[in-house]
Amino acid sequence: MINFNVILIYKKDFEEREKNYIAVIDHLINYHNIPEDNILKYEWKEEDGEFHRTKHINDMIKKSDKRYNIIWDVDIFITKRQLMMALNMLNNGYELVYPYDGRFYDISSPDIFYNKVCNSEEFEYRKLSPGDNSKGGIYIIDKDIYIGEDEGCMGWGYEDDIRYELSKKLGHKIARSEGICFHLYHPRPVENNFGQKYINVNKQRLEKILLTINDKILKEWVNDTWLWKINIAK
Image (tube, rainbow, N blue to C red):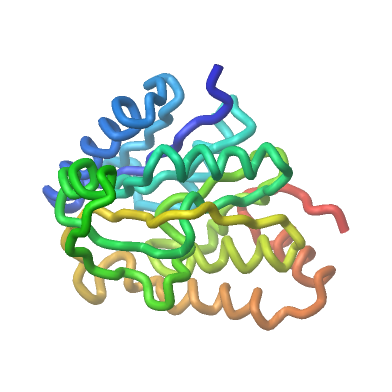
């Protein structure tokens, strides 16, 4: 019996995003053999109000009936081996696991993954993350320990760094599996759109974490300001 759920957060803003969403669902079901009942989907609609990704993730984690949950961006492909390695790490006591080694590569279509990556063939790609140290795209959490996403972050930008840096400072065990995270191409939002207008606020929240040396002060700040109210032992 499968011991995890996959969480997908989807907002249609480009035609390519919808195609990628459909491709990822197919990837989960037909490549990774994950039952559809274990794929939890949040599909944003305008009547839901502003798109608040961190809150939507928290809400879906709360709804999940599994201890282990994979937050899987709707444009990400990884190999079976990567996923199995990452799940084994959770079983061995890690609390936040990335099923890739930090490399984050853009590919033009699912065919590149299935025809090239799966057959270990050379192919053209574009690096999306400088320094081969990406912290986004896909990650797996232990619901019993995870403090939740920072709902003070709106839009896109720095929320992945906040998740990683806070977990590290609070002493949570973090691990990475081997392999590359493959990202399906889609157009990028233009400057000054919804995601961009929150970027400075998100950055300030990250800086707060990086500059706070005292763990007790950091825990108190999280308990006082996280809209996801999970108390952290003092």
